[in-house]
Image (cartoon, rainbow, N blue to C red; front, side, top):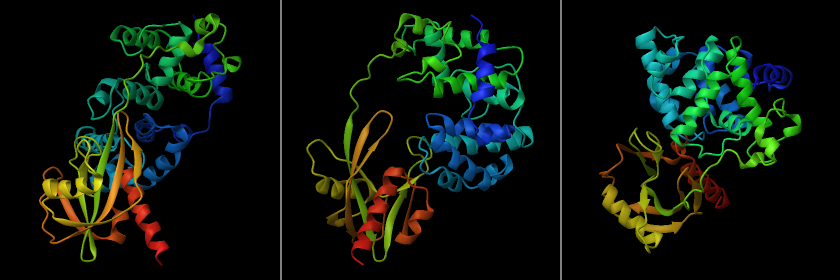
Length: 356
């Protein structure tokens, strides 16, 4: 099966105009690939443009405080990507003189750069003959070859990586890899693939079978758990309490209003008082509730129940969070916050406007 020729012809006629494609220099390609993981192109474009204005080179990124990098990333989610970019930038400056290495193995030695991203940066930015495999490419190859085995099974992944390498043409590896990803994104879509517009329709075995949406095969996920989180908008005088999460783990390095998960059957109003006492050493008088905030993570869903709380003192002893600050409410937007806590902050602004 020969796919490079028709695929590249299609790509050169139909490819989308994207800012990182117009000037595929290594730093911009790297930033774009980090942002594009598990995030739609339309969402990434304004973030990419703002990020490069704020941190135009590896040296600027390495020299910036992590908090500034997280603030620039705010809203994109998967914050480990931003932390890894910051760490990797420091290593690029220290180990490679501020220039990304033109070598896939060296790229993979940097924090946050795995096989896919190394292949993308090496092929697109440096023209090296390196294959790649992301969700779009997986879908294209499982349909081309009607591969019905579980997608994430080790044998399936080895076969797909083998196909990605086998079909890599001797020239234009960057265009070819982008063409594969583009095809999966805009034509060979998960639902309702546009087979009539596909340059690989003739050799596609899934199309011949008559059910391309059956590929790739993904076992059904278990039911997504849901948790209720009690959150305190804790004030003492004219200031509100914020706490910062450890840099490792979910939402690492971000600031948030304090709180924690309710135990089974516990009313959020009871939970917020308990959590503030047990996790932060703060006794509060619980006031009115703000609008609940629903939020979905990859493997769980949460509903935040924010309450206005008044602390009887300013002493705070977090058991998990690494730092706390009492700040004026108007200063909160300057700090990097998780999206759910941005919604709480927006609810506070709406409430304040409603009361004049």
